[in-house]
Image (cartoon, chains in turn green, yellow):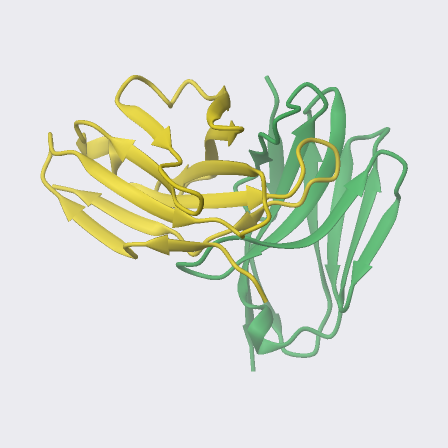
Length: 114
Length: 115
């Protein structure tokens, strides 16, 4: 069964510090992996999209990595800001899901404190 | 910047009633989706829609659900006879492309509460 697992479930970090979120997936055959940011009560907003051949992708202070061999990805947040407080969701798409069906992880809830 | 909009933001209904959730996708997008998120759980795919027909649906999307694009701008999700377990946040998304690197843009969601 295609699955996307994220860790940690939640974390609290001080403003200005860095953090790294993890994602493991079993979705196959792999097409692409995305990281979304979801503020409470809002829809997910895309941060990065990576395909099989991409190892790293940055979007401002967010840097995602992908190891397609081990089926792992990470999202690194640099110099965290209070506005980074949100749920960060790893989302994977399979090649067989040609119509864009996305498999969502449960998310990591990040709280940035002053 | 263009965005997906959804109405209403919150819908409260009685069990057994029909509800219609509305979405206005980004204007030049061709692919449309509905997802739901039960409180505290993962976002789940419901259905994808292209060229005025369903292209893929999940096991959640049973006969109680239907989708429609009644005009050139709206995309609706109808739940014919709501159940308590239909209470969730429903997200509409749209994409200019399908598969591959298509980026899906999500709306703010409609919170459906079934009493």
